[in-house]
Image 1 (spheres, chains in turn cyan, red):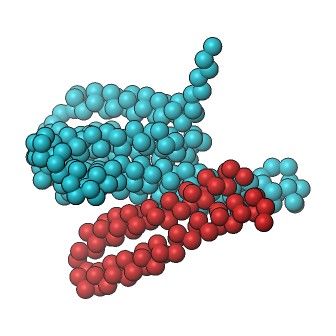
Image 2 (cartoon, each protein chain N blue to C red):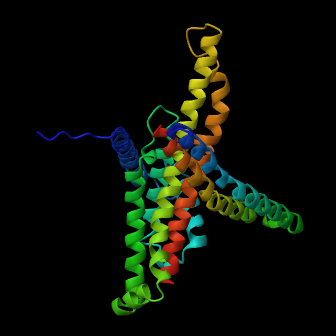
Image 3 (tube, one colour):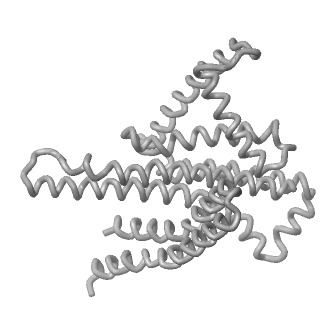
Length: 220
Length: 75
């Protein structure tokens, strides 16, 4: 019999996706039932503020011909990446600390870049410009590797460093013969603030910005 | 020099990739502060651009850290 190992980060990614889907369905119902002439309040206010922030930011980096097709995709990527990077605080193994998941997201961006390039230049010119001069091939592969490696490396190294900090404080507590880890919750939160919250948010911003700029450059 | 010792030395040398990153990010931050001093109204845009530039050039240091972690795990 074949044995299949399912990696833990995949299960956590599915849990995050289900939670996001339930929240979006609920918020969508509230938005449909809201009166457009009154002031929004509650969930509708939160969603409108978030969408407006992302929309204004995307407008400053991508031309507005992409409004209908690409802005919603990047808003969804933003929401998923923020939840995935911050889920290390709840005790999940962050989904983006698995290279398969970041590679999958970068492959979508890579296919979008090549598709927009072919649509703009036509098939034959695209192949001719890809082959000669030979460094153009590297310039096409480079965003694929660098985007996925950046996200993966930041989140994974944050996770490993926090595990090392907890191991060290555990050993220190053992030295003072306290049966549980007493120094961990005192020293660790500041480091969590940098490695998980700050690094996670900045990396989602960089991923979304870089993807959208690369696509906008190809479609001119 | 045993195998284990050489691997440990390699893992230490791999993190030297952070040297250039530290210098480069320092230069970027100093230019950003200078630009804000010259034009205090554009502070929001300058801050966004600086954060983006710093995160991009931090990639090389993260590559070094990643290689070092991968080497240490093989010990």
